[in-house]
Length: 369
Image (tube, rainbow, N blue to C red; front, side):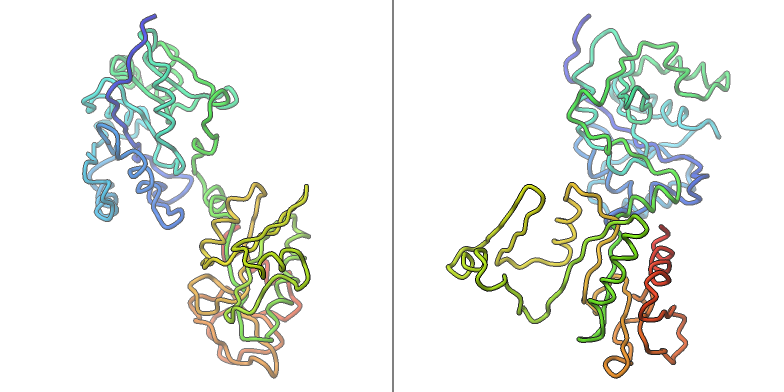
């Protein structure tokens, strides 16, 4: 066996699918404010060649408008299927045929977390004995996140001529190196693909919304009711409280309070089961959301108390004698809740102050959970 040195590698993003289960273009779905295809282009822009494989010219128009906003897309070359309705095998064939390099890393455009660490790891196994380098997860191959050598082109063309479109059939007739992900430092999340609306909805977790209203309108009470209702449904949540007056502190006489009062810039206390941390540092809601997402526990919802003027979706709390007029923009509202009947019929759902079940149903419907 002759070990092959690290080659110049082309990367091809396959975005020519029919999207039949999603009913919309998966590559243009957004995650954290960026389309899947934008994330992938940015991730793989450092490679020697970056190809974007699409079905036809008309499909490429949507991608071009998206790529115009991405500086990393300047060197992207769009290629088209030559044979219609041949599935991803045709996309692989076109990428290999068009590539200027001998090795091509194929990546499906519905894999938003795919990382350049994948081809870097696969390349460590390159040798003269194999033509395909395919990662496996729990023994199952990942053919749309794998490296192919130009030498497989003839076998693919023969397979397409015989209308045998399963990629697994290719692996029966060319030398394949299967590489278990479990033996690497790669995360299985890197190989996650998004095929259905349900999978896409799950990708958005944790869902973030505010419980807003003026002071003493009942925001904290509403959040406590929602926490109880979420718990009944087997769902988890985290809560962020916004204090616009900067009037909170550690409880007096606690050790952490004394440390901070003495001049420590941060103080923390922990046990085997939990920790608490305080620091004199300006943070935004987005910063805190990111910290919650980084926790090892799974969080389904993040509830922010306050931020009535923010763009986050909101449950607005109204209370008789305290807040009988809406203070939130209608466009940002999931629903209103309270003991006040909002007279202006503007189409925003309304619920009673104790109807946590109905309010949570509305929230889940809003996020398409």
